[in-house]
Amino acid sequence: MDAVPRLAVFCWVVASTAGAAAVGSATPVTASAVPSATTAEVVFPPPPEPPRLRFLYAIASPQDVSDPHPPFMRRVWNFMLGRKPDPNPAMARPYGVCAQDGLIYAADTGGAAVVVFDRAHRRIRRLGGSVEGRLLSPIGVAVDPGGTIWVTDSAQNVVKVFGPTGGFLAQFGRAGEFLKPTGIAWDAARHRFLVADTGHSRVVALDDTGRITLTFGGTGTGAGAMSSPVNLCIGPDGNIRVVDPILCKVQTFSPTGTFLSQFGAPGDTAGYFARPRGVAVDSDGNLYVADALFNAVQVFDQAGKLLLVAGAPGSVPGAFDMPAGLFIDPADRLYICDSMNRRIQVFQYLKLPATQR
Image (tube, rainbow, N blue to C red; front, side):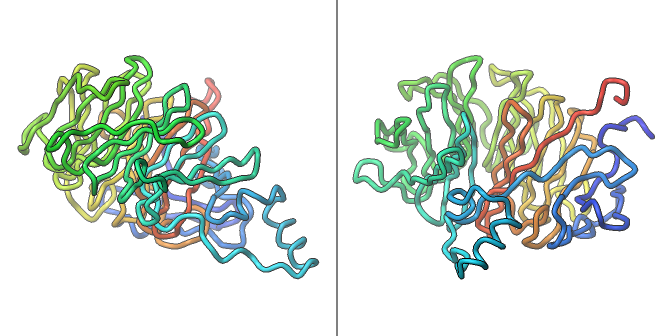
């Protein structure tokens, strides 16, 4: 194995799939293996390499939340009772996602709502239907430790705040303050929310009263400048990663907004970007970037070296149709907004034993 043995084979695979395409510097992203629709488990890399990421489940319809049976038993039970699968998806076009305390929150841009999935209690609820809390184009969603839900609305140029039970609490964004805000992330260490203020080519920090306490970025193409920042996240190190799909790069900033590093360039091969969207960081510092045009999630080390390409066009587990927002929870579960498949896919990042690292 080379210097990156922990994530050395880069494509989605199914345990029973024979062979997989390894990624090199000139391998097209679209060449990634597509998992079989009939395979129960999706893992990568394939044997004999130890698995590093395992598909857990997907949420696409109310049935995925309301029915506690596993997929196979669900099909048998429904067949015996003459039930047909619920044809109505829970979301129209999800973009942003986050998770906390067993709840999954999806900003459904196409459905003009935030959809909250409660798998433990097998129910779904929607936010954004009240007069004051009405959502037009929700893009990003983030939740603080108390369960307060913050949502960016790019059509209304505001950030809206809802209580843990979904009641509308507040709206931030005076005339001209934000322009098409998109990504949002909770910064637990500094008790603030970070927002990608896309139209103003910057990132802003908001305290819990909605007051802007920090801005960084600004229009340009150089180090630290931005064109159209759309998504961001805070890593375990406290640093802020910002994705810019126009410049096709990921930039890293300190908690105070100081530029630290960047990587990425436009291209149609692995390691490059075509339409980068969501970004997330796992507990080992690996950076995940969703690319809507590649229908894949690429993983890089902190220096920007490509570690993996995950995905291919399709609708089976591990395949995508315009993936967008990403989120990684403290248990290293990766949540992926599979937008045009109208679902959230959830994977588990698997750490190697210390002796194999």
